[in-house]
Every structure is written in C-alpha cells, then in structure tokens.
Image (cartoon, rainbow, N blue to C red):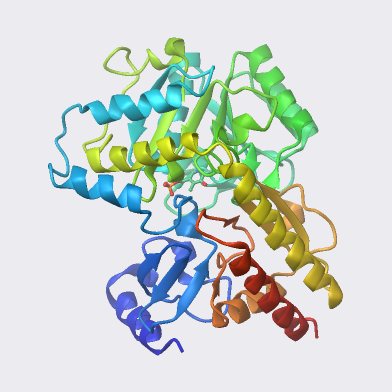
Length: 428
Ligand SMILES: *Cc1c(COP(=O)(O)O)cnc(C)c1O
C-alpha cells in the first residue's frame, strides 16, 4: 500500500536531513513512514502509490478552500505569467493590506514577509524596538516559528527563564525569553514581578500547536492588563488561527485586543506568506519610516499576494462559510467522540471555526503539561489505522485538524464510520 512512498522516503533521506524539509512531516510521533504526495484535489490528497486520502491537514492550515481551488488557481496562473518576482512594489500588496486593514479596528498597517516564522520574529523586533525593552514572555506549548529566541522549553524547577530547546540556540539569547504555563495567571504575574524589562507577551490566543487548546478569557484579559500596566506590547500570533477560527481569526472570538497581530497560512492560500500588522503609531517605527530594520527579497511576492487576495475576497464574500465549516468540524468531532465512547475510549474534542482538535485523555487539557498526559500510543495507532482507511490526520496529537470548504457531510460521515472501526480495534 505504501511501497513507492517507502522507496521515495529512503531516497529523500539520502539527500535531505530526515527526508523532509520540516520535521513534523517525518511521522516521528506515529507509525510508519510519510506518504509522498503527488497532488491534491479538493478535499483529497493523492500519493505516489495512488492512495487517496481525505485531507484534514490542508497543508497545516492554509488551504481553507481545499486543494486546487479554481478561483485561486486562476489568479495564480494569471499573475505568474506576468513575472514571478520584481523586488519592487506592486499594487497587489496594497490591495491585500487593505483587505486586512479594513477588517480590524486595531490594525492600520501591514508588512508582508514570506513565512510565519519571519512574521513573528519581526513582530518581536518591532515590540522590542518600540518599547526599548529586551525580554519577551511566551507560553509553553505555543509555537511561534523556529527563530532562536522562541525555541525555549521549560527549565528545571521554577517557571520563567527557560532553556534552549534546540542545540545551536545560545543560552545567552534565551535569557531574554520568559516562559510561562499557558492559561496560568499566577505564573504570568510572576514574570512581571521578576522582570521590569518586558517588551511584549506573545500568545496563540487559540493555541493550535499543542493540539487545539483555547486560552481562557480571564487569561487573555490578564495579559492585556499586565502589558498596559508595565509598558509592554501584546502580540497575538494568529498565523494559524487567522482567517481560520473566524473571519477575524481569534480576534473575532475573544474579547481582548492585542497591539500587534501576526498572520500566515491562510493569507497565502498555500503560497509562502506571512504578515505582521498593528496601529500606525507602532508600524511607523519600521524602516524605511522608522529605525527598526526589517526586509525581504521576496516579501510581498506578487503570486503569493494574488493568491492571498483572492482567498480573503472569497472568505469575505461568503458570509456563512465559518458557520458552515464549524458545523462540519462539530459533526466530525462529536461523531468521533460518540464512536470512541462506544468502546470506552475517552476522547476530548473541541472546535473553533474550521479548526478542530481531539485528545485521547480523560479531561480537557488546558496547557502543555496536561496535553502531555494524553495517550500518545493510542493516538499513533489511531493515526495509522485511519491513514490505511484513507483519512489523513495530522501525524501528531500536538497538531490541530482543519476542515476545508469542499468537504461534505457525506465525507465526514465516512470518516466517523471508519473511526468507529478503528476505535474498536485500538480499544483493546
Ligand atoms: C505555523 C505557525 C508559525 C510558523 O509559520 P511558518 O510559516 O511555518 O514559519 C508561527 N506561529 C503559529 C501560531 C503557527 O501555527
């Protein structure tokens, strides 16, 4: 069933570290090796062995309209024919910026980059430059890309100062990153007690990188309050939740307003794009207007801008889309929960717009430590059995699932049916 993929993986490993260009793709936390993909079509992925999968990963979020959406495909081809990159301004950038600015009261200006990592890295530089402070507060389990100061894990003992979570990250850099438990107000307060040099708090307001774990309203409110009180800026990392959780992302759901927002994934519709955005007052500090340096050869790439622009226009034009996608997410997760319960498997599920999460554990996890208590063996078996039945779930319990607009109730019901079979198999 995976013969050609196994061969392709072996060949890839010869010339690419681990055979992949992003570690999660290597199936490290699950069983077997990754299928090598030849094409996507609507809700489906097709691999080199000709297997077809209902795709709940959707390139890890960007493809809210599914693979090969005709409208997006059309503008991408049309734009590409005029040239792939100019390194000079285009009206497409202004148009996409306007789409974003028009939607948010707290956003006047946007700067485009080429990835979520770059967006967050630049947003943090901006926060540090504007406040004149050095430290940042981040939460365990929130992922903000792979830039040095964000690769931190909890050190031994007390909270706050963490340790590098990767070799190659100097401890000297990490000493400016304070680490707290997600949804833990007490630890957060401690950070501000320990340091008067905090430039910003960065949070995934709906965390999607430890599975789907939303922040509580009180927690976000406390972040806001502490930032205001201490002259720090509040950053929402909406690279995943932006245009996914709702049209306005997490910002459209939670009651707290951030100072800076980062975007990625959906705003590129599958092309490499990131962005960070804020008020005029803050953004005017960026070069060339201000002194805070930030740049990119391919930033605001015309093909990527055209894809993102079409995607956002389509999302805005379709007033019911998030409601529709959420109904399907709820149908899927509730169906799976019910199926699991038949075989006494506790499954915790949640959704936000087109995002869904599920955990094999007794209680709803609210932070990374609790997610760590889930049954990872059971998840690995579930993942493998579902894959064999043609359902492509993210290959880690730490990831979020995505519904795309081409998915039908019939497809979702077929997934629930398959999950029932699998739950019986893995209940023993
Ligand atoms: C995916 C993601 C990033 C990193 O984006 P890349 O495009 O992979 O660099 C940053 N923050 C969050 C919340 C993400 O989900």
